[in-house]
Image (cartoon, rainbow, N blue to C red; front, side, top):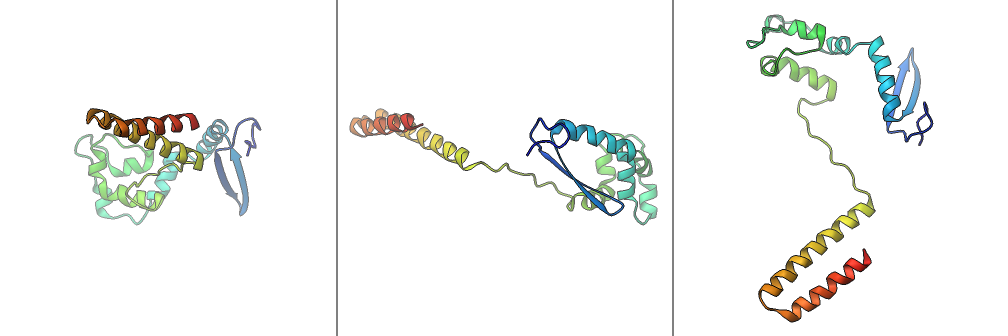
Length: 163
């Protein structure tokens, strides 16, 4: 699918925008998505978004939380959307955990593994088999098992020709 904005590149980013109850879907390439992202950030700053997400019932502990290293208060983070130093993550651990849970659905990152196409998976398994056969060939030669080595050599050659 081509990018709806430039109609040149492959669309890799798919956005759904809801304005006044009307749903618009955008299919954009990386470059056009960056432009769209800056437009959105100009209208709704990241700090405003984070402040809105972190705005919950204010408790005395939230108001009084201050980083011992840089002195930034959690309230200042809520306004700016930026932490002062790496120690802030420890100082605001509880507040940040609940914020991350609301944004991402979990406070812990699990990551993703790209899905290999069937062709890539076959090529990868073929390479593994070839490496394994070469190792077996080396062992057979070292142990002076020359008939086995000749058989493995022929098998490796046929696999390399097929590739």
